[in-house]
Length: 192
Image (cartoon, rainbow, N blue to C red; front, top):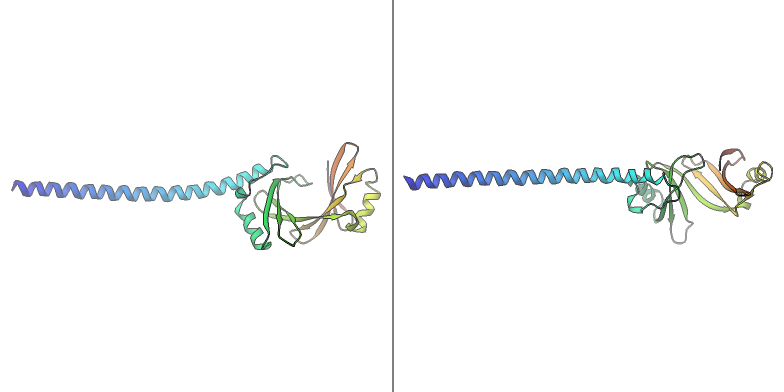
């Protein structure tokens, strides 16, 4: 009888130990799943936060791996074959905080792609010579901004809605300013 009781006790202890181990393993798996989910959320939040921080300090480099996923997806979808070369914090003329991503592709022109810090695409920028500016913009430079000297190149801006603007950097004495024009010569914004 004592042997049967000992076996019963061993069986009960074994069953309890098995249940405790099983519960512990399930808890570990649940915790790992939660940690993975929290890590993914944390990574996404960090990516957006770093994008937001990108706008705080103009001209600062941004690690390409920390760009919001929406930016990376936009580039791979809309610029197939292009490779991201660099990303910097760069406020727009309007003061809007933005991320400037340079992309290149062999035997193709390179572009700067401009995004809001949340990853929304704003515009594509490409360098052009001053001689490529529309006549209306050139007229503005020689009349309204005649006391300022334009940089050697301007930028053609193709906005998300496919409208086109032009950006010219001007210098007057020690002051520099960025002026954005519509194709008809209308000044969109001017920043010093």
